[in-house]
Length: 328
Image (tube, rainbow, N blue to C red; front, side, top):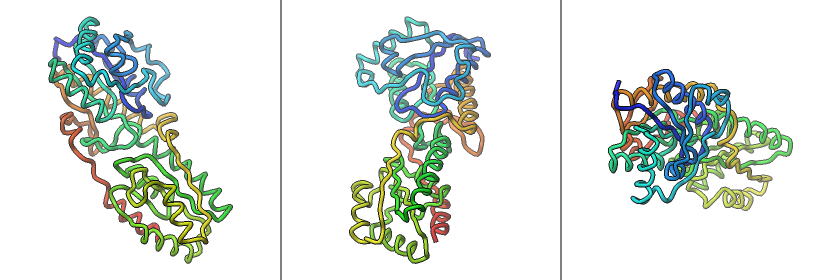
């Protein structure tokens, strides 16, 4: 154990995701188990600059493992992007007696932590919390599994309406740069087509697919669209294009939006958050820094934060193949 670390801070930053509270709980209780002081920082890097700290103990995190969002709140902090802002944050941490911190968030949050470490030689460990599953160095990020279940449940309900009225629904899901949510829920919900940024389906192929669906006797169709898909400017343009070229379809659009981030975390995300939180504290006490906790082959691993930020996740080609077969 690195005896120089006596107090660890934990905070959430960037967009919220289900499982963040479970990770906070794991960090706090691991600190209690290891007899290390723990403080929570409210409102991310904003709170760090303002000194918005609160001591935490094992009882402070009762009954939060099942809650969505983050009890510590989250914010995007422009001031932390400046050297002056980071200096203020460092002064607040030293004033509080904090020796290291665990940040739960995405690549923007990790970039801030990495810069902070370089400037002040301050030990930092990251836990990936984002529903997009777009962080390199981990098979799953916190919130991804819960988001999949939320979206599949929504699509199941939309299909009831689509079937009742013989309609085609374009369902837009989150995924500005990656299509992990769209691909997985598309397969899981039995979508007729899946549009993702990584695979340019093309408008003509989309029309051909919809024609085949109609010809095969399908009374309704669901097309899952990642918000970053490139074949149209947006999902509403896709709707207009299909209406113009396939007037036989009664087309509707459903943009699921931020509901995908909400809700109680799944069992998978609760367990993953607990494992990651424990390892984050252990890594700091082992004298490690600038690392992100991840999972691969069901084993908890550590990846340099710099790699996690710069690396790119890859879409599952096997799942694309399965999708093509299932939409026959």
